[in-house]
Image (cartoon, rainbow, N blue to C red; front, side):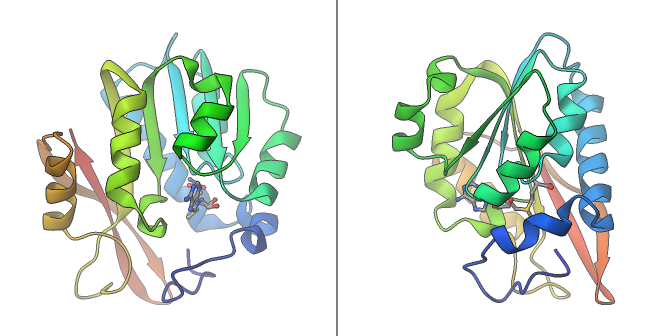
Length: 199
Ligand SMILES: C[S@@+](CC[C@H](N)C(=O)[O-])C[C@H]1O[C@@H](n2cnc3c(N)ncnc32)[C@H](O)[C@@H]1O
């Protein structure tokens, strides 16, 4: 987030792993994400996929309530930190959410009740493709929670406009009920709104 050069599309996330757990904005973001999820659904007995889990700030909070969590991230260093937390109902995977990764990991043999992508999709090059994979991994009546940066006048370079997010979901047959901006982060004196599409 603030320590990241957002104009660089290709970020080396390994370089951010070491400080991530102590990064106040990341901690704040994860807590907010969890409260949005918890307001909508009880996690008890549910299986969750945390896509782009990072060091597991959100994974850890979810794991205390859910039956189990599969946590996937393309950064080996982020996953190393998560693994060191030794959370007993969390399985971590290094990789992107691609057909290859899914085919190679038996954790994907079963579908998920909930999939979460908290501050991830703005950083991936193939959002619609990934969204389609996410849809295929969700149980019928499962929930997908996406939180992402709102691209607007104060933040013109990173994230999604409301129209882009609506069109992307529609293109794979998901209808968004509402798009809210439930909180914001201040970085380098810039207000960065967080966008939350509700399906
Ligand atoms: C802003 S961080 C958010 C981490 C975590 N969700 C959190 O809130 O603390 C973005 C994360 O997305 C991961 N990421 C970026 N592109 C990815 C991809 N294509 N597949 C999986 N993870 C990815 C990065 O490695 C990084 O850990």
